[in-house]
Image (cartoon, rainbow, N blue to C red):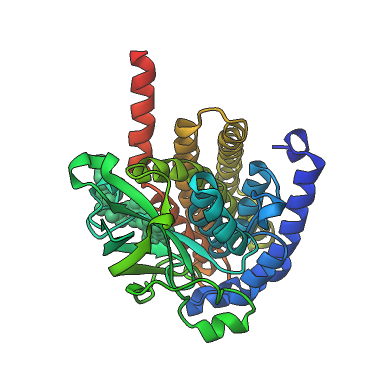
Length: 405
Ligand SMILES: Cc1cc2nc3c(=O)[nH]c(=O)nc-3n(C[C@H](O)[C@H](O)[C@H](O)COP(=O)(O)OP(=O)(O)OC[C@H]3O[C@@H](n4cnc5c(N)ncnc54)[C@H](O)[C@@H]3O)c2cc1C
């Protein structure tokens, strides 16, 4: 796809800025932070300095006031070199900040959006529970209203930024007899783990936010991929949440979180596509340099066909992802298109990165080349923000409704 056909000058400027940042700041450290499984505070701080943690929010709220396409371009470019940095932007922006921006009161937006949009602190989204994954409506975390507070008890698992973040949107059941209409959402605050280290990086902690007693993060998950992204459980024990921290009306938490996931899926499609493109570019380079049987392996039709398939599928994925983003940006319905883009691009990321390892041969299986990390990073794209099976369920529901109509 010739980007200049669809992008404005501003999109191209954003793309070039992030591409340069990813090349000079992300690429050199990606392998080390992946191997160590550490959160890259220093580069995340530099992303915040460039406005990358508040891309779509108005300047008046501390954001960069760019459009949704720009945001997708950023995720896509970062993921070409490192998916962990890309998911940090995505989980913080779409999952952690957007529900407050979209569904919050003026007071909630005034208080919580600026520290998130400027990157002073990181945010997260707590939906998944030990027994509520794909079936997110099975939420067990309970919120009981008492003396001007809600008292929350329960736990969430696999929450991105659970350790490093300070502001979270969380679902909890307010009316167990009302099914999904009995689920509400709340804004909770806690202190980042390792506050000393966090503060030393110049970001991550805001002393003006009051940590809520009984709200804490568990130990860091030791993951296959996205290893420089922070994933942990969150525990809630008699957490007193002021009524003014309820996000949206009582009973609207589930439906609002589903809307948030619709947008999140376009972001995950952009990230997945970035992984596929990064793996493709590395493979193209390697295949033209690596010689066997006296010639570059790129001369062999068997290798050319793999590169051709990667290239064709990446083109298809770009159209699906930017189409879904365009619909969302123009306030058109986009749930089905977001699910299609997420399904196709995440499965493409897995196929393309696996092919990339194959093209690199034995070297591809070592940490000397980035493609093995890309293959590990791609797998979670088929799981997070709704598995591939869940995307197929969403798509099937839409096409069957369209048929009935
Ligand atoms: C690194 C990472 C980061 C994450 N970040 C967050 C986050 O920030 N916030 C958050 O809330 N969650 C987060 N998650 C959780 C993630 O969204 C869930 O793991 C995901 O939705 C799947 O839920 P589960 O793990 O319980 O799997 P399950 O729902 O138990 O699924 C297991 C398998 O069964 C299949 N399956 C389930 N139901 C059906 C069905 N009806 N038909 C066909 N197949 C089905 C699934 O597709 C899957 O293959 C994260 C997870 C990871 C690993």
